[in-house]
Length: 94
Image 1 (cartoon, rainbow, N blue to C red):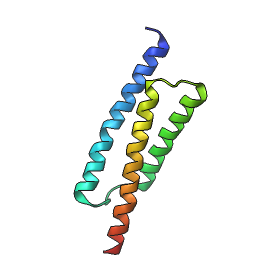
Image 2: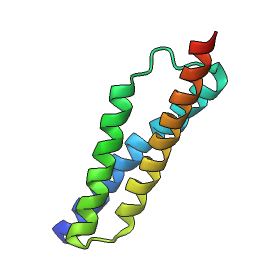
Image 3: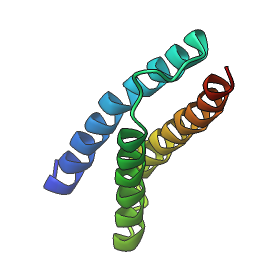
Image 4: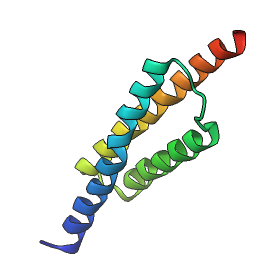
């Protein structure tokens, strides 16, 4: 196994590990219908990090399976961000 393949496997592992947290986070928001304790800054920073990762893969032309995990995580963080604003507006009305 060459170093590029090993690096891709390890990068995928990191993305999968981080990605496992997002469904739980989204479900928590949906169950509690509240964003108390959530940090908008954190969500935006993480989203920006995933976007940078996607852009890096596109720039170097590395369109491997790792890109899928970046996109999947980005979609989940974006979903959490949409829920954040949705429930924040409901909380501000009450």
